[in-house]
Figure 1 (cartoon, one colour):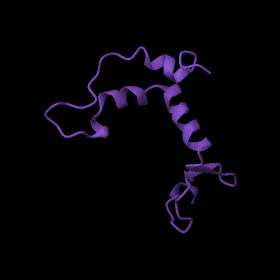
Figure 2 (cartoon, rainbow, N blue to C red):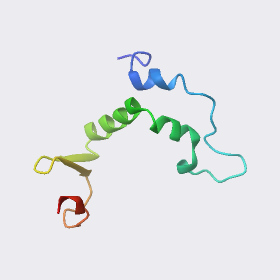
Figure 3 (tube, helix red, strand yellow):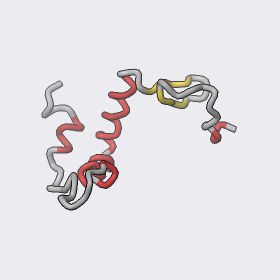
Figure 4 (cartoon, rainbow, N blue to C red):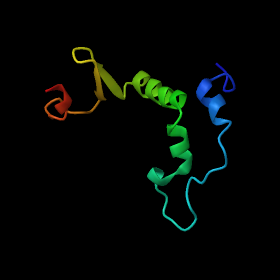
Length: 83
């Protein structure tokens, strides 16, 4: 699929001019207006999810229909919502 036909790429071409970093501040991705704008678009979120799942960075637990990081230790008890 070409970049122009790829929905996430096509939609970001309409992004308004936004700062990624303010000149007087240290770079912090959590303060990026560009990243905020991108994260508001479902097709961009889906693109990210598809990419990390295809690369094996997150794995699916079929029993609970949940996802976790590939390196997340199974002995951690951080899935309180399942209890």
